[in-house]
Length: 215
Image 1 (cartoon, rainbow, N blue to C red):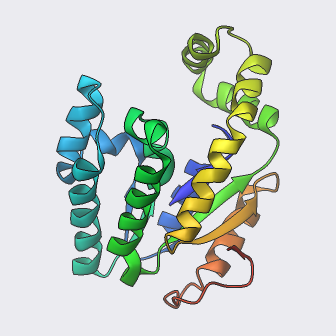
Image 2 (cartoon, rainbow, N blue to C red):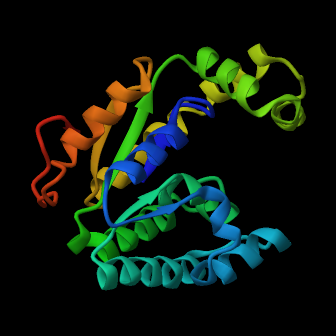
């Protein structure tokens, strides 16, 4: 699963690189939350803005992990279960409920040796990259959120979210994910190389958390 300091930091680039290098593999893009049959109930809750709760999320994760077991495939998720839920109303109202939910996802994935990569880097640079790659619509979308359509304002907004990102990473680590912080300011091939080394590819990862993970 992927996490990072801001859009444009390179999560999708790393996910695509991993999906190219690993085999067999299932690349699960964030937009596929709205198209995958296992996540149909989750998608419906997001569309209707009633928002998915743990009892809706967990069967979707269970089905996805079951598919990976059945095919002996790597699952590369271009998002993570903590950040997808942590800003939802029920999670904001009850940090205990959020922690319990992430723990439950960790238990569902425990035999798969789950890993989360957190991409670290300069937020302004990442925001500039996101605008360059995704165009004016990205700027307008986040401008509507922060009240000002400017790269600097959007970057400032994402900096303000850092405590939430850090909390998500802690929850993933406490739930049994091996959490690895990657320096995303380096060229993409170097980031991918480090990620593959941490996965001990081509061998399967073990349950033991390597020394570079976050505990």
